[in-house]
Length: 134
Ligand SMILES: [Zn+2]
Ligand SMILES: [Zn+2]
Image (cartoon, rainbow, N blue to C red; front, side):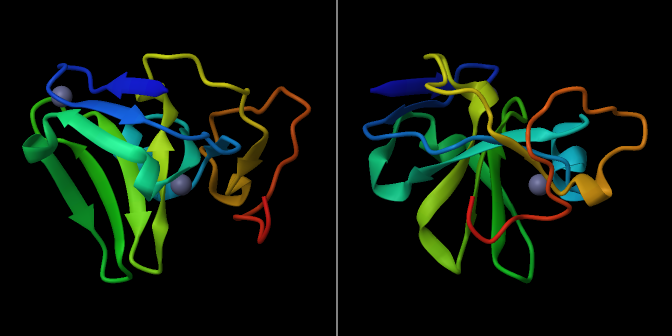
């Protein structure tokens, strides 16, 4: 069982299944949403995620393409994103985990739009966008 919270502690979640391969996402939307060089996200089965508390405090920012970024309305912590086109998974923002991430992030994605001030200094694979299969 994995658990996590937002910054203010209003939102507590549990994940009763595996956490998929995490990636560093350098796309401009993630940079804006996190106020940082990248987001670190990992896929989790929607059915495995349960909000123990604070679900009513979740707010979403949605695009016309059906991408929803879900965050704590009290403190702004980004919690996950989900897509109407892929309802069976959510992409967890793994920085909100309280329990350890089972494996370190495996790749950089959307490197083609990364912040020019951020240098990547590891040997992980770099993808210009999102690879078709992770
Ligand atoms: Zn919060
Ligand atoms: Zn992104």
